[in-house]
Length: 135
Image 1 (cartoon, rainbow, N blue to C red):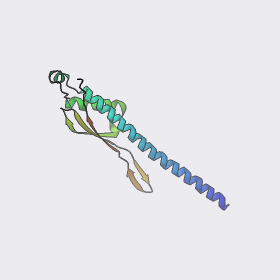
Image 2: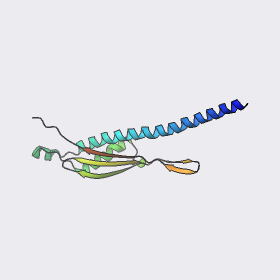
Image 3: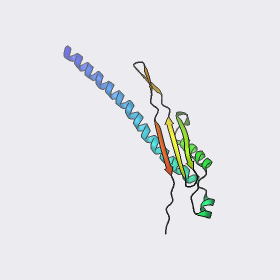
């Protein structure tokens, strides 16, 4: 009888460890997906915001700040819900094109043994757009 209790406790411990591992895996997988989404959206928004008239006249890249923010938010909202994220823009320079974005995911709180814990993941990205010259 005593050996069967040890077996029950071992199975219960195994189930508990698997549940904890699934929660951690879900959080880290979401973080990786968010990073690559921010990276791709930022690059596409920078290309959309290029001022082509300025480039044709002076041969230098210059982007429009408002157009970048609008394009970034539109593209990000196509893939994710904006209600679960807080997006902050800082350090946006028009010439040369550079943008810094901070995206914070608003996750739910977990209550474990009376303690409430939040797992808000912050992704920061600095993007600089360059063009290669052919000589």
